[in-house]
Amino acid sequence: MTPYYSDEWITIYNGDCRDVLPELSGIETCITDPPYGLAFMGKDWDHGVPGVEFWRLVFGALLPGASCLAFGGTRTHHRLMCAIEDAGFELRDCLMWLYGSGFPKSHDVSKGIDRAAGAEREVVERRSGAQAESTGRYEGWGNDGGDGVSEFDITAPATEAAIQWQGWGTALKPAWEPIVMAMKPLVGTFARNGLRYGVAGLNVDGARVGKEEMAVTESDGTYLSGNRAMAAPNTGRREVGVRVGRWPANVVLDEDAARQLDEQSGVIGGGNRRDDVRPRNKGWCNSSPGEGVTATDNYGDSGGASRFFYTAKASASDRGENNDHPTVKPSDLMKWLSVLTKTPAAGTVLDPFMGSGTTIFAAKETGRRAIGIELDERYCEVAASRCAQGVLDLVGA
Image (cartoon, rainbow, N blue to C red; front, side, top):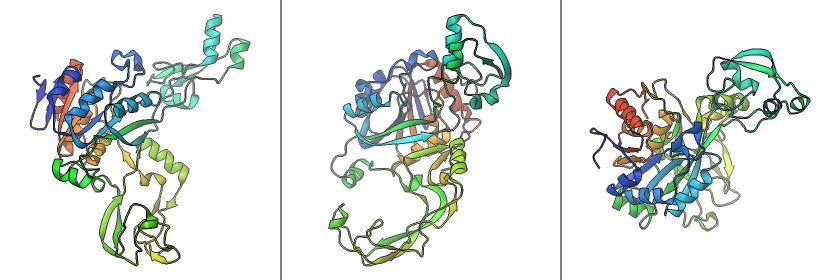
């Protein structure tokens, strides 16, 4: 199939991914945001979760050991996970992307009762869209200020039944989305697969969180197995260098969620100081009970709890011009996922449900080539325009 758009870094195909994927091979990573099967905002493309046939084709395009990261909906990600697993992938983890800016899309039961009775409700207050979240008055997406409406009415129940059901809704505020992390099975061990195919595991150091320094230590004892009870004793540890940032977690925040978390946690310490002594068998690489070791593998800092997690920041220019796609992800988030799955040779990122192209541009900004496939030509045009204009305002890794 002829690409819709192509440059040195990015290739975009306009068509059904089931037609394009059989032509692709040797790809190191798939990062995608497929339909959630929620009929979101009445969109036809969100009518169902992509089934096994889609993921088998993705499986065929990837190298052994390649990561596949797919966003899902909280009500339907079980179907997504089953389809990915049934296609041959190994499920490795499930990340949680927490965000604080979601709006409840809930039906007001009291209003529904009055509407069914043909009763007119009295307007008791006029509020701005900025006040929408605090009111909890949502009739559904596109009503009562939940989608940025400048003003909306607060009404009082008109019937006895409506008074009884005042304050009842049908949904919670959305505040997270799962990101399924799967892997195409290895050929042999991680080490052998990495040497043969250039793909093995995750780029942990590249995706570390924060700028704090941590002492890197090694022990003169050696593990004999993954079972600590069978490990050889460690008789000492020595500092061999300094590493920047914390180990990446399977929880990711946005700025609002980070702020709310810090408000709740207050200032907390970072755990063991570098001169703390702790019993063996209480931490990584400590196997003999009763003795003590100096803990040089932790931080002595303090701050809000959000510092333990990566926080994605949404740029004002993320969307670019004329981009009305309803589910655009923050480019910083997609960039971090691209870094996390980056291979030593960088490689290529595949997005078979490209939308308006945030994933492929984020991949480019991390020094990776990318292939995007999108059925809707209008969004291919948006993605190509964003690529040509270079509108993404992405921060360095």
